[in-house]
Amino acid sequence: MQGTIATFDPDTRSGTLLLDDGSELGFGPEAFGRSGLRLLRLGQRVSVEAGADGAVLRVGIPGIV
Image 1 (cartoon, helix red, strand yellow):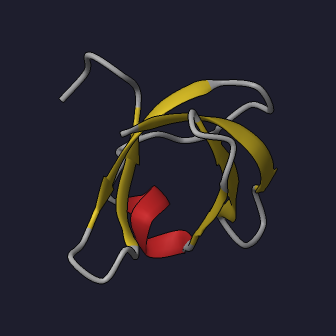
Image 2: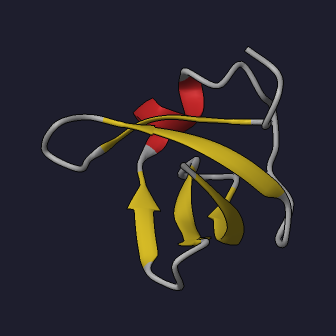
């Protein structure tokens, strides 16, 4: 699934994203840490891996594994 970064706090390494269906989804520092990224920008397009419970497991850049 994909979305756009709505908020990101570099100190806590957590934030929220706006999914393509218009819903908001929060992510914690663990999901950001698994991305291998150093920073996210507001409005940046991201891909999201979610677990069976709907929790975000990983936030990444679309097309980059």
